[in-house]
Image (cartoon, rainbow, N blue to C red; front, top):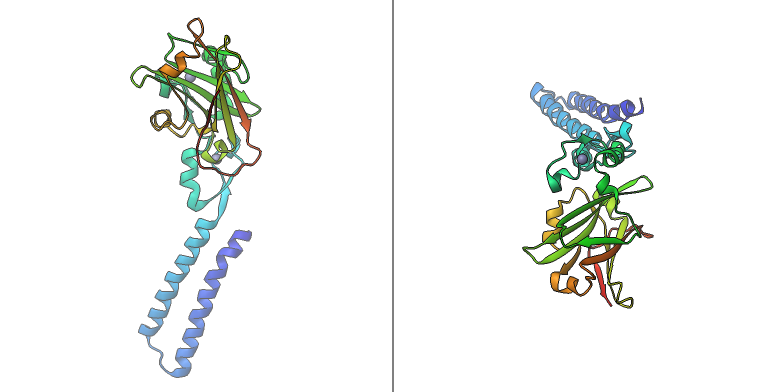
Length: 258
Ligand SMILES: [Zn+2]
Ligand SMILES: [Zn+2]
């Protein structure tokens, strides 16, 4: 009801202006249909512009609100949000990596899907000692922290002779910037030496191949990795943390080698 009243305001203003113009025309005895038509056309266009502005500034509930998205979106930004809304229907995140799973569903169902169909991809966890064997080339672990869903990725590229590691939040870019990840790589026989990398999480809307190609992630040349390998195994841990200050920042990983 309130929006109807607001929408009427510009309409009333323009009508009032037309009436006033008509009255002034009569007083000055310059009334012609042509003059009135010009006034009406101008004001109808103005009214159209005002209504459009009003329409695109209007905020509505996300179309995926019933699935959990609680954002109110301006009409002008709706199309953009619908593309990246984490509650829209999505393909299984593993499909883009391994190309096998045909599942499509929504965010609240993803945990069940991973647990039932991809239990091997649920074996990774934060602050847990992980092992990378030299037979593995691509690893994806699904990690749930509270109500947030993350994907931890490792890619061993024989072509680049590098190992890439990163974390994606299944969510928007803005939400992802509120989270950071840390990767620790160590050799158990050298307790005083460690590789440590900290960065802002990516959104799953950012293609993994772009993250690796641009090296916006932990990137380790094989020669460096070899110095941490112990009995053919590379030990590492990863951590995912909510940023204390949630200001958007320039993506720039912090790398420390001890
Ligand atoms: Zn949404
Ligand atoms: Zn799947």
